[in-house]
Image (cartoon, rainbow, N blue to C red; front, side, top):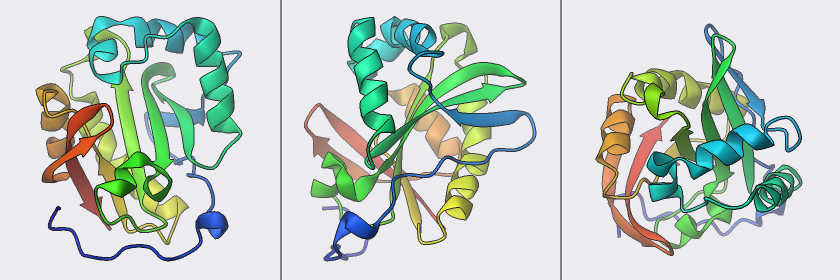
Length: 191
């Protein structure tokens, strides 16, 4: 158990909307991933060893197309591409934590949001992109959903690069949790 508050949602989640698309400014832009337009790029990124090692989703193109359509048609998660100066540099999944497996290991509130983050090109890692994006991204998510009070990340405990970037981007480690596919470090940024 983490040291997060002991609140457990009893609300019916049917009234909670799907995760919002963050409105980024300046050099950053975010848009929902398009299964037709973005499939080749996302498929290539997910095959990259530095991404596949932690995402475990080096799937065939057809499965990725299905996954993107499934996410876009539901209320659990939203696949997002983030551009820097007009070039795609990151893939995000913004998700409702209360509808995710992570809700089984921490006291999720109905409007909590979670993030999965991947920098697709190895050449773009270790440049401070994630740590510079996270403060604006979390503020944009809080603005997009005024009822959201926490954004969380749950990187694999072995992913030191991600944990360092997330900490530098304003997220505080809360504790280790066991998820179906990994031992994760739960990290939270509160409003």
